[in-house]
Length: 98
Image (cartoon, rainbow, N blue to C red):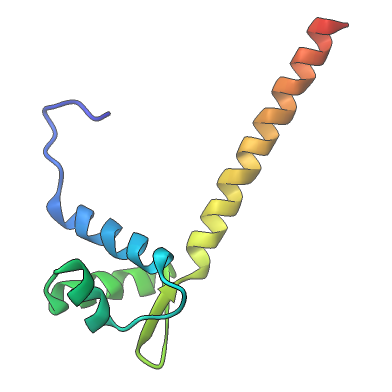
């Protein structure tokens, strides 16, 4: 947890809410749907989506938004890191048992 001297940036919460919302959907959704569901102004949603699109966190098709390839890649890299650490720890456990 961050030290109490740091103040959270409210727009970060909105961005994360948008990304999490997209992951909870069964398919692409419009910016207006996101805004209504999260009760965030449409312009704010679209500003966040602009950055997310630029960074490939989100993709768009026919004005509908869904999670992008970059998020899948980050998840995959994180999972691989966990697997590698698990393999290393298992090797160490095997050595201790030998």
